Length: 353
Image (cartoon, rainbow, N blue to C red; front, top):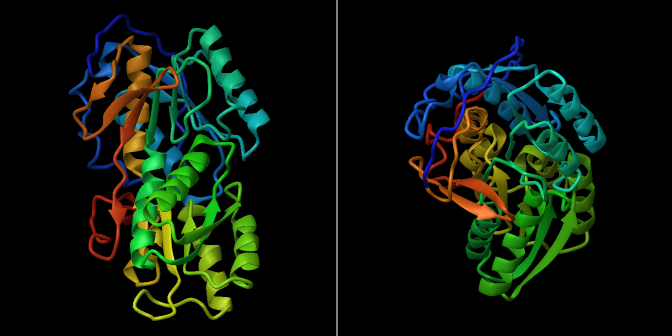
């Protein structure tokens, strides 16, 4: 990976707005990689815009909050974050409103990988660089995608699941939104790994569109009619509470050492997800690095405004910048969390209440 500086940028006056959740998460993390690849904030006064997706689960709230904190820590200003509330059309309008306020760069958390493209193209036409975080878009000119390898997260979940169920039985795959790259990649990683490594396992896949109520409805239909060995949840942030209540209601909420235990593996690593691992009900969670998402989304947006140029290659923060679909993506690490490492203070879910 190499970088160069091309220009600086101006800043317009703006208010700083963050949601009062998880304020301690970024504290102690801002030295991770900051300054070693060029301090974008030092090249000029920068204002960023942040177009959020929805704020109905703790992962999204923490992410939005800490992008604001990280931006300020790196010497830039950020406009009040917008909340599209799960509406892709509103997210495009939010992007237009942010562009009208003379931002130097945009950070987007896409709801839908296709629906976000017109908004990115409008930013491209305005000469405003775009960084997306958590979700990769399917088009437009994007400076950097900051996300974990969601396909690998699905495979990691598969490996835990397959081992815990002994390579036999039926597993319910509660998918996310298959219109998003994350939802599709997690499901594909899980199911393709199962087909390769555990061919005797039957997979029942049900989409949930990242909706808690839909996840419960789909799970209730399957669990009440089928002998299930395990459940893979594409997001414990969305699904953990509802699925645990459902299993308890049906008398199937047992600890990992019980002979009739349904193996439970999820992705996100929220405080609740970690608690359920710690209490012996969840077998594993794959922890998304939400603290690093925030840290590097801000950094890359500032660098984009200052004209820093990146190329593919290893970073100084234990990740790899790769080229995917004509875009650069920083694939941040996402650890598998079990009872053996659930108390690791580096896990984002242990940094918030």
